[in-house]
Image (cartoon, rainbow, N blue to C red; front, side, top):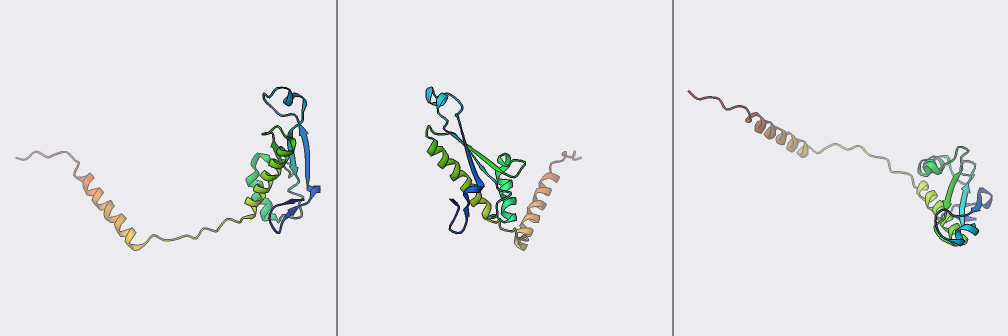
Amino acid sequence: MLWIDDTLAIADWELSESFTRSQGPGGQNVNKVSTAVELRFEAERSPHLTPPVKARLKRLAGRKWTLDGAIVIRAEETRSQLRNRELARERLAEMIRAALVAPKRRVATKPTLGSQRRRLAAKTVRGEVKALRGRVGEDE
């Protein structure tokens, strides 16, 4: 059971983990111990998430979202399999917490009357400055 917040928990059947050897340099430990964790969460089939949350989660996940509606998170930062597993689960929980927050609707506002007048006055002054930049006429 992965607890997201006080009211939401992800069941164990929705999560699957596989362990592989980590990438990059690291000597014998990298070559013989499978410490990298690939956490797979079946987000599309999850009964615990509402459709709007799933839509926001899909947008947040980006390339981590697979075609069959799962989120795949890979963690290989540490040499410990247990710590990598905790990191992957925490990343998933953070992603779901971010998707639970509905964005605030933007309320359109009008500029104040004073700001409109200041803007037009500044435009008038700027126009006069530019109008005075012409060639100087010859006085006779």
